[in-house]
Image 1 (cartoon, rainbow, N blue to C red):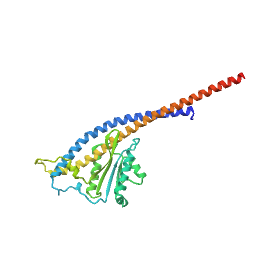
Image 2: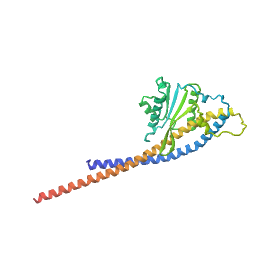
Image 3: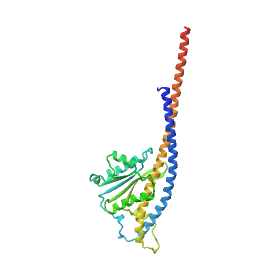
Length: 295
């Protein structure tokens, strides 16, 4: 059994750790509230814009030229792994890296062998994790979270869209944690480019039943809406990831605080036993000494 002084030191250490994790939990809860509001405010606008875009696209001729919907042979792939700069949030960052690697190994192993799969890492942790696994990111964005804004994120998404339009990449995939609630984050793999318009998505979109007059033309509106819609989709994915990060960290710190409490209880029991054993030994020594003097 460890000595009383050692156990007392461990109790003090665990107590200090519990205070830190409890404080981090409260900080994450405050940040989560703000991030959750941003996600909730963005989603209706993003969904409505997608609905309008879908309705307009359905009305256009099938031969309408849309550079962001061009389907080409999947030779050059870009995977965008969105995570965070901070740790202490469970498997939040590692899961994104694992999902990116699993996607490459399962679907794009041939392209990766030809060095035609590029990875953009959003966040220091996923960047470092991918490097450790010998999947060196082509670019990493670590400053984006310091000044989080639509303007900064849209600049990156514009570059990605230009790369796709110039045929630098044939397919762009987003991997991020979608925010459901504080305790649940869903790893999401979403095709960003080319734009998908499968039967299921089109079936879920409300079609126009009346003949509307558009000013300006439907074609011009779609040309304006498509880039904006893509930028908003990208920004929405980053916002989802930020909210998920704070939710994951709050949950991790909550569990850590509870675990520290359980550890303190166990240590206090051990401490009391050791203290009682020490007192018993001292009493026995006193009694033995007294008996020796009498003898």
